[in-house]
Image (cartoon, rainbow, N blue to C red; front, side, top):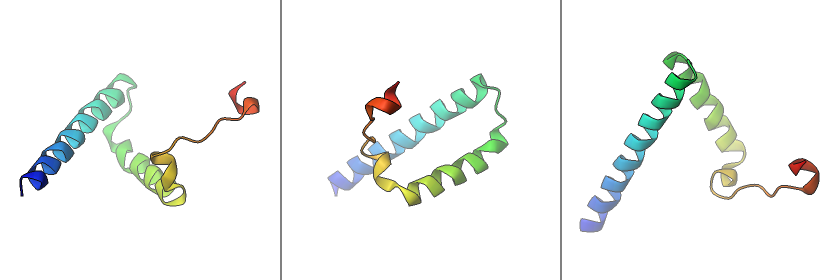
Length: 66
């Protein structure tokens, strides 16, 4: 039971930290907060197509790096 609480606290900490940094990034780029819906849809679509890219970065070819 304690491990479930620990995971829950970690998840909430992650969500709050991500939300605050996202809000700061939106504010620094003067992006209206209403754009969050379209951005989250685009991220979700990309996640459904290539979910492993969120956990393992793509390898960069020499041609792509230049």
